[in-house]
Image 1 (tube, rainbow, N blue to C red):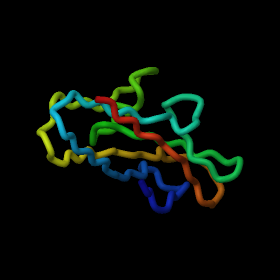
Image 2 (cartoon, rainbow, N blue to C red):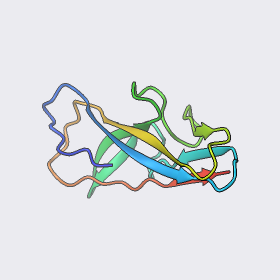
Image 3 (cartoon, helix red, strand yellow):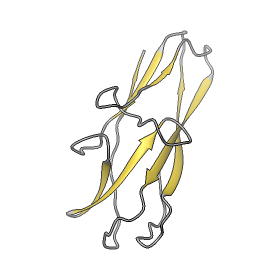
Length: 118
């Protein structure tokens, strides 16, 4: 997911979306969890630029209220009971960087692992 340029003076959050797509050969219950990306908690996750940290999070819903994680610490996993056989299922990941973070300019990155269980 790319957020683009974060403006430390903007009073609105910086939102973005991305997708993950899966296909099942047999109808199975699917759960997708996302890692915390090495942050101490899921809320917030943190992107790094050297020693600098930029808080952000990933959500299951467009309102950005349900933190997508592994089911611990108040997070929720994506679940789909028996998705259609041999059909691509695309799931949207909603991202948000909260406003008001006084961070220096730089390239901030983080790696999240998606685990699909069936």
